[in-house]
Structure formats: C-alpha cells, structure tokens
Image (cartoon, rainbow, N blue to C red; front, side):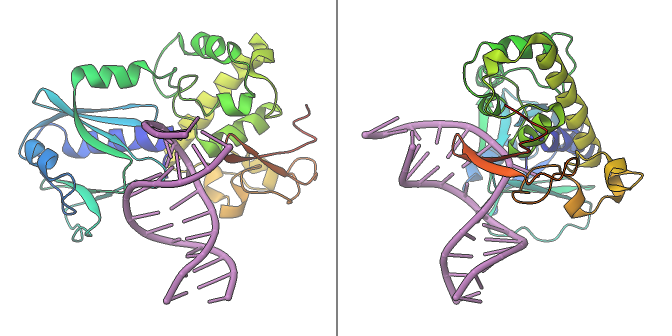
Length: 267
DNA sequence: TCTTTATGGTGAG
DNA sequence: TCACCCTAAAGAT
C-alpha cells in the first residue's frame, strides 16, 4: 500500500536491517532470477527513497531499483521468516532479517545514470530535506493549467503523493479538487506544501495514513482512532463530513476517484 | 467460488 | 482515453 511515506519507511527499515554486510538474494518466483543472482552475496551499502521509487546500492556498478506500483508489497521479517510464496519476485536475507517482494511494478538492476534519470524526472519530495522544496513545488504546480487534484498526482509536480493523500490534503487546505492549478496563489501553494510535509511525516512515523485530528472525533491520540475515523474524505462518499455534516462527494479525476466536501472545499 | 477492488504507472491509439 | 501489468483480500453470489 504505497504512497511516499511507505517507500521511505522501507528504505529506512531495509537500510537498518541489511546495510553493511553481505545479503543473500534469490527469486522464488523466478522472474528476477538473473538479477537476484547478481546481487546475491554482495554488501548492501545504502538504501534511498525518492518519492515512490526505491533504490538499493550494493558494492557494484548497478543498483537495485524497485517500484511497488499499486499492488506491490514488501514483507519484512526477523530471523524466523516463513517460507516465501511462489509469487515472491525477490527475497533478501541475512542472519537477522528477511524481506519478500511481491507484485512490484518494477524490480530491476539499473546503472547509476538510469537511477539519476528516474530521480531527475521527479518533482520535490516532501520527505527529503531541501530548502528549495516549497518554492520548487509552487513553481511546478502553478505552471499547470490542469485541476489541482490532477496536478498533485503528477510525480513531476511533487513526488510521493498518492490517491489518499491528494484527497486528504486538499480537504485539509479547503481547496476544491477542480481548482485550476495555475490559479492557486503563492500563499495557498506554500500552505499546501507545508501540509503535505506534515502529513507525509506523520505517515512515515506511524506507517499508516491518519489525517484526522484526533480531537475532532473525541480522541486524544492519532493512534487511538479506529479504522473508520482516520480519514476525512477518502472513500467516504455519501457519509457526512466530519466538520460540517455535508455528504461527501465523489468524482473521477484522470481515471481515478477523488472525494471532497462541497461545503469545506468550495469552488 | 466467483468478481471486484486497491495508497501506481506505462504505452498505444 | 483505454488496455494492460502485477497480487491478495474483500465483497458478492
């Protein structure tokens, strides 16, 4: 279930568990047998996340590049891992940990130049340090004439937002998803960026997307919220807005569903 | 035991 | 804009 926070979390976790010593690698499914064979036994130097893209640098020319896509998953275990399923594209293991990669959109070895190209095509990543992030985001957003709801999913505008965060962040900022991106003023764009940074950081820390302020549902901590209380609009069509009670609306935007509150996010 | 859906992205027309 | 890729879990029958 991957938006940017999930990928950064994996980079951190796999860096902690695997970096600094040789890693066993194989492909139970077979589809990545050759690539896994090249990695097998090498020392992992470091991991890195850029938006939804994940890189593993070994003591080698080539990097392992993984993109989970919509349905991809990485399952990470301690020393007592179960056997991999036959759908496991790549298994990584050392004495302390095991990770199984299932259903990724991309899993391949790339040379440094290709990795640079992939990263270079991305907009600023709210989970990376960078003083330029806010200004860069505002410039890229305001250059587009598309609806802001479409622009936020474009990884060249901002890297790491997915379908849940785009809907939730627009709600938090009170912006209607159909608002043309080039009509979002500098100040709104700055707030949009700041909210994105805050929300993705929360997601990175907890491992799940919880945008609701716990006080709004009578709780004290985000971790206490039930599954139904974590989001303001995503997947809530027809249900009353948590703030104003207006039924949440749903539409298709660029082939994907988006939800919003017609009262709190006026046109 | 089916069918549908999902936090993503690409390539063809 | 659409078909398609990848997999598992939830929902419908």
